[in-house]
Image 1 (cartoon, rainbow, N blue to C red):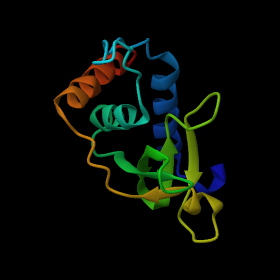
Image 2 (tube, helix red, strand yellow; image 1 turned 90 degrees about the horizontal axis):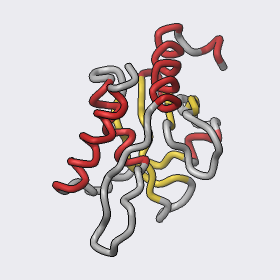
Image 3 (spheres, one colour; image 1 turned 180 degrees about the vertical axis):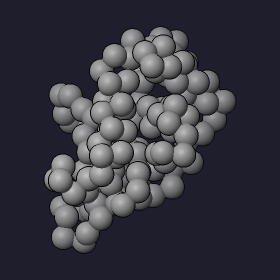
Image 4 (cartoon, one colour; image 1 turned 60 degrees about the vertical axis):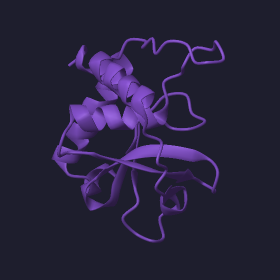
Length: 135
């Protein structure tokens, strides 16, 4: 697939991968149940969209089936960067969703989630700050 992806898109993917690999742990505090707030894919994609403005767009939806909420990044040409992939060790991954026969088009299903509130926005800022610390 690398031969089908532009050098600029590969560089962007490499930069995002570097940020994700080097980003320090982020303390998002404790929720109302007394549990630590985990970093989520929703926070990560929005933070990366702030770090790489105009180059990536955060997309919400379902992964595989309705009910498995997920967020990923969209770049030009139908390419998807999943910086925080579900059920994997490692990541980010770069996949091609530009043609209907690609199995990836059936895994990344766009849907509007409406998950934004003040706490969530604060968490995105904290994640973005941690990401900027490694740039």
